[in-house]
Image 1 (spheres, rainbow over the protein chains, first blue to last red):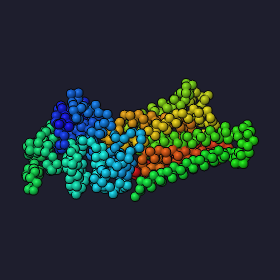
Image 2 (image 1 turned 90 degrees about the vertical axis):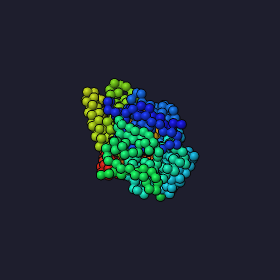
Image 3 (image 1 turned 90 degrees about the horizontal axis):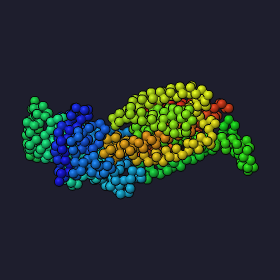
Image 4 (image 1 turned 180 degrees about the vertical axis):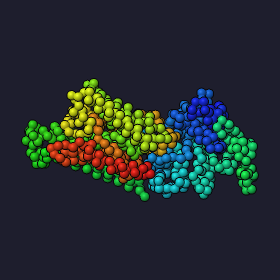
Length: 263
Length: 332
């Protein structure tokens, strides 16, 4: 079943200047879709649109459609949407700092009353997510007292608390060193497999893409290519979109395609 | 590391301690003044049940409403500061500094010159100012930008104050009364003023307590808050309306008193963390004690003259403000 369906999506920040043009693709239930493309090519914009947020600034054209569970995204109320879709932006500028536990607990907002305290059940869920991600020991620390890698995990924990079928991740590996990158990578794979999540993830590092997913959306402003890893992750498409001379080889152990820059 | 149980314990202890301080200051505010009245005199007067006596007239007709107004106004200022700071995600968002108090004063003066109900004018003036600030400095990307918030707030504040002055000059008969009022003072504020502001104040407290969970979410930024399920439009309406109503009520209760909305939430945040459901009541109690204390000083510095309370809060507040500005937004 198609979890996310995008039909003829055209979006613009200013009138007449399309950031995305006539984009159509589907993401099946339990599938991971990798979003790649040059900087400023519209990856983040697309994720924001899929999350149905920031609508004051970006406009979709009239015949554009984004369906979540076959229902128009606009038809979801804020808290209903937060139970279907979680979104992790690239960065977050925290105005004030809460404890790790308090931060993760706020992932339960959509399930709790907007005016009453979080329930015992919500607190249990937050604690068990902290345990799952191996950051239980951090629960009483403030978010400005932990490392960048730990904070990223806390944010993922907050998303997991939302208990959504769909997770949207905008370059979750940026600002992380290689050790944290690989830990986070296996974490995302585990989440996808064990919890059967539908994930759309944008990536900077092209070589992470074959490690995660079999479906790719290559997007650069008004041009976009959607298909399987074998179809899209090729020199011709990548060279065309990135305007770079790429070479491709098979990874000797994992038997997946990897890219390198020729000159 | 703070254990949650311990954090809760320290919260309740702080509430208790601050409540006792407020009570003590309230009591002192009743007996101290240009004419200090000893406890013995008060006790005797009550025993004799002579309500027209000098002592009881001062206590019941002058100092009691005045003290309640000071207490109320401190809580209003601190609470509106807490909500504005949370909403604009900026520790410098004080109703005075972002022009809301000036807007409320203008609204009040306009309504007063038209012989309409003053608090309603103050409310619309405050709400209008808050909306302007939101339009100029709001939005997810810029709302933590201090310079934009402060510059627009200050500019609007000056503009509102200028229009207020023009109106006061045109209405020269009432000018002195209104002038005193805009300066911030509890002098000669009686039961009538208290009854006028009591209902809007209580309503604003109720509404502000509804914002606490939302303000927590907003600390992650509008985008993240929205993905967690926050209705941004509704939150904006609730936060700006409730905090403007509180600022307006405080302007009606005691005129423009600066910096309480800045100092109280910030100090409490440093001491007890950022969760708004704790921050709001703590700030209110701290704000009440600050205003009660300043009002006592205002009476005692140069009796029988009274110093406008805004001058005293400025002496406490300006160094604090500069300290915050210097520390920038690196702090939590």
